[in-house]
Image 1 (cartoon, one colour):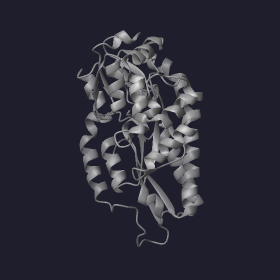
Image 2 (image 1 turned 180 degrees about the horizontal axis):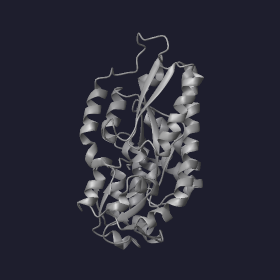
Image 3 (image 1 turned 30 degrees about the vertical axis):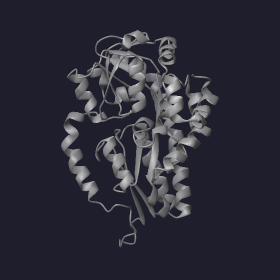
Length: 348
């Protein structure tokens, strides 16, 4: 999702998003303890994301919100604004920093525009499977990233939600080896790591906000894009793409981030409940994505995509030869890189 994720009809959503954003920015900068009817919530958090209501993330967070209302006896109200109704990823990241909204789920790649270390989970061809992903992100590496996010004024919840391993789609040709990326115009989320990786592979990456991707593919501004299968299906990229190469080139997840001052104003008992319920939502979301992915290849094939499964060896060899891994080890720092390699093995 870098990224990120879906608005099934980006061409029709612009005006609505601007109108909603304008309304959102008119809301006081932080949740407030207001004069309100006796049955109204004491703490109201506005939560924005860019995926449809039917996506597992929203289903699980809304269920968590219901549990929180019950557990707090109505004191805490988590209100979901899905499908990019509050603006682009860039817009919402700005809003959660200022307190115009209180919560936002963002991919590590998008968050890396503010917190560069947040992109470390997306190092190219690092993770071979989910066992390695969760060992890293629920372990030492995740702790290091959360501590770094806190320095930016945001609070990151304990469990990261799954977006998935990212695959490459194309309207021109399948990607079978690293050589097939030569000159390939590919949309990627705004991310220095993504740009560097695809340039190292010989591609021509273009960074676009997610709302613009469908139209860019449709009008051939770019040849392809990269996202997990769940997002490729949810936003109907199969309508404007012909090939899907199971490159598994990086894994990305959604960080649930909270405006720092808003989080600190919550009483400790409510903080604990929010952490617990959103942690449960993340675990449930991971299972949902796994189940969804299991049937998506066949579904997408029936919708016209032609699949192939490349050997990752040529891609990793090119990244090593180009100095990509060595460069990013230096950028991310020895502590975080060591925590990554403790799980995935030596990269550089």
